[in-house]
Image (cartoon, rainbow, N blue to C red; front, side, top):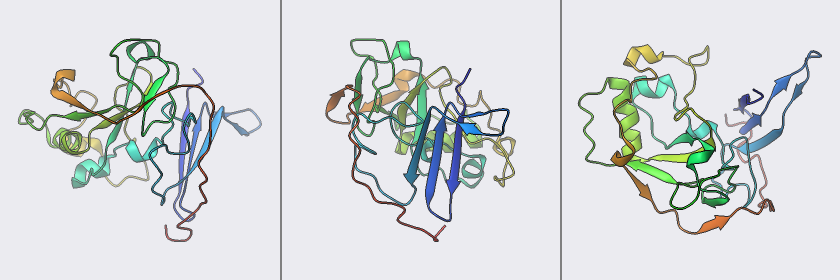
Length: 216
């Protein structure tokens, strides 16, 4: 449905390439609706690339750092927040909060969540009924939380098993049903500060990169 994302991490140059609606045509040429290049060694300001600027995720921030992998679950090293997705009809229209810098196409109103919202699992959540892989994800959700990143119907996304991973999800008994039973009421919303209205007037921050060439 033209919603293919391609993520490439150039570890030598310290660059992260993320494409949205990436398509390989019959001539072997790659096209994309959106290509954003990130400096993977830079700590970006709260507005990321710049307020009102999108990315391969509608919220405007990078996808790759917010994915988790089978290696992180197997070694219990999931030490970052996670991205999550909601249908556009479940998000408030034309509003975002940092670290989001854009708001995509939500259509809801009132108190619906907005792009950039950070949901953190309550410390009191009981994980005793969950498997070892799910416990690692739950611990990260309690400490770092998850950020609303895009519109769609798949709540959480993760790095697939591939030749680039050393472990498999089944090693920690983790699959698409491993987090069943966690309810929205088990989370608290962390106030991210100022709400911004979407204008589409992208103003890029003055960022020079790469900052870590040759260190990957």
